[in-house]
Image (cartoon, rainbow, N blue to C red; front, side):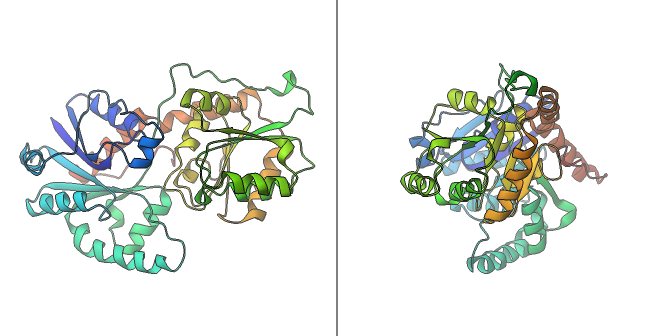
Length: 375
């Protein structure tokens, strides 16, 4: 029996598909240990505990409970820690696991590497690599940007694997498409942004880029709320775009997915985004995506027929990507079906299989597997 213990700052719905699929495998036991249930921000958004299937989970454990978890089945266990060094609780447990010579691994996103602080973060991770790398069995880096960052900092490339966040298709995953023959040619392309209205998400960049595309027929649906909403409304007004935008505000997930499913194009213009699970959600519905190169999920659409990647913070580059997709019109039913079929490789079962291949390759010193979404 293989035992995997995932140590996390909080429970993550973006890991539930992967962890539940992993726990469903024969001969595998999965335990999730979280310092807290959710962050305060997630609680305010109304998050509920994800469905982890057969996986067990423990929230806010005592020190004695953590010690007992580390003692249990040491030869059969691998302890995987999220967010290397950035959480005091997790770092303390990781140090204890290393002291006990337990099998350890790390799962981490790219740190925010904007601005002058990037230099300090880089040397911080170089110092972490000097100590931690020798004790890690493998390193799961969220996106190829993270792979490049941590390898540059000194983590061994032969132990570093691209990883991601994964969701499963809803039970009623039926594509509602606007197939070209069924709609008039002058029907606007439905663009959607889904996320928090904060500067980091870059909706201001999207509005400025769309201002250069007024000659095209499009409508923008903005789903979400946040501190930047009033400023974005003023910006849209100054650009003459208000009559083309519908501000939906925060929506329950089922309504948000209904709007996404009936859209022609998702845009995620983030200035920085560890992953961006809405990209997964769009692709599962067969909706193409434009996202910035600062999104981990850019890996899912780069150099493909599933979307485009633009340089973060670059309005001109985003406008070029919009021009490309708006000029070709909405995808046909078959094109969207192809995207949806491809999305099987970014669901929980595929991620769990890839994870087990990583463990096997490191345990048996065999050829490394390729991430299915990059293969």
